[in-house]
Image 1: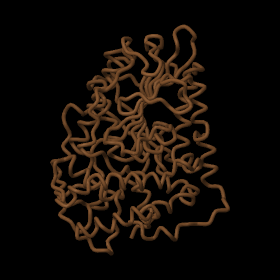
Image 2: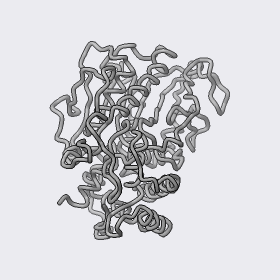
Image 3: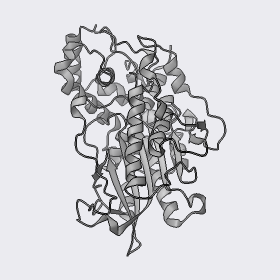
Image 4: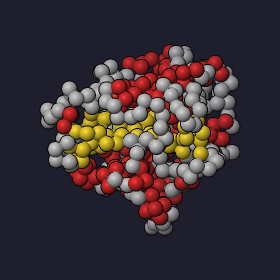
Length: 433
C-alpha cells in the first residue's frame, strides 16, 4: 500500500479541481497591449511602453478526476473522452533541463496504477482540456502576434522556452497551447523541458522538501478537522449516504464533481444544493493548507518559482547573451501552483483557479524614461499588486513586493534539507485520504 506521503505528493503535485460552470468569468478578456488601451489605474496609454518579455504560468486543461467520490454513482470515464483533436497535434519532444532523456515520472506512474470506471486513468487530459489549452494559445496569439507584432508567427525555439511538470496532462497541455499559439507552424521539433520529481519546484513538493513536509504537510489532514468544515463534511457525507469510515474531504468531492460537470457527466442529485458550499469549503481548506500569513510556507511552496520569474526579467534587463532572443517563457503547472503564487502576489480571490487559468507577467520598458515595469494579469484581467503604485508596476517595486517570498533554488534545497528544531506533526496525518 502506498504511503500517506506518497499519496499526498500525488495530490499536491496534481492540481485538484477547476471552477464550476456557473462561476466562469464572462467578462471580455483584456488585451491592454493594444496601443488604444490604457492602464486602468493611471489612464496612461500602454503605447508609452515597449513589451520586452512575457512569462505565462498556466494550469492544465480539463481532466479526469484524481479519485471518485466513494459510495456514489460513478461516472463512466471512457477512452473516447481522451481523443486528440487533429488541430492540437505538433511535433514535440520531452527532455530534462539539459536536453537529455525525459526523467522518470513517479507521479504519473501512480495515476496509471489505478483505473477509473470506464477504463481511463485518473488525472488524464481530456479532449475538452486539449481544446481549452488550444484556445488559450489562440488568445495569446491574438495578444502577442496579431494585436502586437511581438512574437514570430511560427514557433522559434530561440524566442520561446517551454517547461512543464513531468506529468502527462501538463506536458500535453503545453503542446496544445503551442499548437494554438503558432497554429501548428514550426520548422523544428518543439522541446518541452522538465525535471525529476525530487527537484521539482513548480508545485509544493512535499516529497522533495523535507522541511515543507515537516512545517505544513500535517495541515492537509488538519484542514478537514476545522470546526465549520468538519460539521459541513459530516452533513454532506450523510446526505450522500457515504459510510462514516470512508475517507472523504471537500477537495476530493469538488474534484470529482467539477470534472463530471465540465464533461457533462451525471452527478448525484443531492449535490445540486451543495455546489456553493463544496466550493467554499474546498477553498477554505486550501487557504488553511497554504496559509498566506506564514511567509516560510509560501517560500517553500513557490519561492524558487518566483525567483525564476524574477531572474528571467533581470537577465532581460541586463541584456544577457544567454537569452538575448528570448521573448516568451511558458510554464505548464497546476492549480496548486497558481494558488500559492496568487497568495504571494497578494491577489488571491478565494476562488479555485479554473482549468486553463493563467497568470501572465509582462516586462515593459518605458519609451521615454527607459525604466522597466511589470504588468500582471490573471485569466486575462489586469491585477494591481499590493506594494505597487500602478498596474504598470516599477520593476523595483515589484521585486520588493516579492522579496519576502522569492528564494533562489540553491537556498531552497539547502533549507529543505536543513535540520530544524520543529516537532514532527506527521502522526496527525494518518487519516488523510
